[in-house]
Image: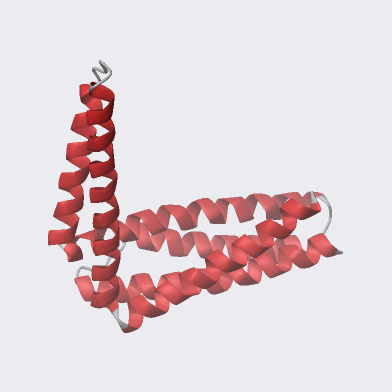
Length: 180
């Protein structure tokens, strides 16, 4: 159990640091970062599609009749090419995906705060407040009231930075509680 908790703490801190770095990149180099992310996601989708087609061709030689695999691979390639040719279009999707990830993580921390409350540990209040603040960051990402693409990216970057810092704080509190 101790090994699992050490990996959890390490993973949580590392993920939060990566998000803080991503947030800083989005705030300072918003267009370049979005384009780089888009190229990466588009490239991965094209690669998945090509591998799927190769796998399909290999299977067909053995009598395989999975046409859905071929359709899936072609659609994946088309989606990848669309993302690569319209890299700024991915910016509208990123805030939804990151918002959902942040809300899920916040719900996990909120649950942990309730468990701490059940053990009469005073850290439950801090953990709960941090989880609520990070959930608000996730909700803001999903229901972004800003219309300008550059404003959206800057806001996303700022929210990701805030979330990353709050998550690091929350993880440190959880680790202190676990160690004591």
